[in-house]
Amino acid sequence: MPTPTLNRQPPAAVFYGWWILVGCIAAQMDLGFAKDTMDVYMTYIVADFGWKRADFQIAGWVTLGAYSIGGPLVGYLLDRIGARAVISLGAISLGIAFAGYAAMGRFDHYLMATAFLGFGFAGVGDVPVSTIASRWFDRHRGLVLGIVLLGSNFGGAIINFLAKALYRDFGDSWRAGLLAIALLMVALVLPFSLFVLRERGPAVESDAGEGGGASDLTLGEAVASRSLWLLGFALFAYYFYYFFANRHIIALLRDHQSYGHTVPALLVTLLGVRPEDFPEFTKSMFEIAGIPAKLLAGLLVDRYHFHQPLAWNFVLLAVGSSLFFVLDSQPAAIWVFMLVHGVAWGAQQVLTPMTIAACFGLRHMGQIYGTLLLVLFPAQFGTWYAGRIFDTTGSYAGFYPYFLTLNLLAAAGLFLLAPARRRPRA
Image (cartoon, rainbow, N blue to C red):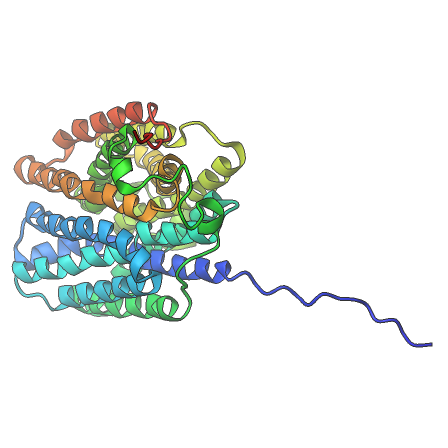
């Protein structure tokens, strides 16, 4: 009697979106490398060239000027030439920037390299990565964005120690360290962007349709809504504070050697964290604390649909930023600051693109998100002004009230946020 054959279905192909996820994580790791490396090397470079810290931060305006131009341009190019070309150009720009830093001999060289850094940020940053991931994943979009954006945490956590190790291994040479990091960033992303990433995913059709959904606003319609201006102010307040915390925290902790003595013996034993490495350890802890925050933020919003999650996160951000007022008198508060700042910063990266999609729809998300990033350029004033206050007074304390006030105002404004609607035509 013949043996009956089972009517088995062929195994389903692996959803290509998972490969997209890996490529986006690699791009975000490059972003983490790029945004933190120069903070590790700042005091060494300033000492070698005889620059002031405020002078060093002037380049931030060049970075953000290029980023502010690149953000809206990236949103436009995603629809025109595709993600593959955008992210490839971003990775190459980052490589050029750090190779330029390694070879610079004057301040104008530094500024020219920094322009490439800004375009690189735009090419591998949150706008293209969030837009691409949102187009490929319809269900559990918040969790997926949380996973994708973990790449910058991993990159930042790694580079704070890697950059210091390269500096030592190359005989206290920041130039050799920067060149090695330039090669690493290009090698990490370019294979993914050229051979893995695809242009458009199925979620665009399911969410908005080829002609755009009824709730999808164009850029012009978004600009005419109150929601875009509330989000713009909130992002200005956030980056005004974040740039200071990100760019100056290592220098601040190096200025106060007492912070290094708060390193528990357990960390010295298990992780080899030496007191002199405590500033770099602190920045890495921001990244590590942001890992569960990103996942939890996306998961909770997907599952429970919390009302105004971005506004509540700004409340947490304001609480964390207020801890700067007690760090000088209570060095142990740095541990609380690491946790609160890391969680609020990590959650914000996930909640911002989700809020933009909820307010304006998915189809033109890249252009709207990129346009909102125009606030980066004026927000850089805070980083320069903080350096100016330090150069004048020897302390950052006079800067703290500014960012705390802005964070509180931003939180209040976000509670008024509501999905924008198309205005009926006459």
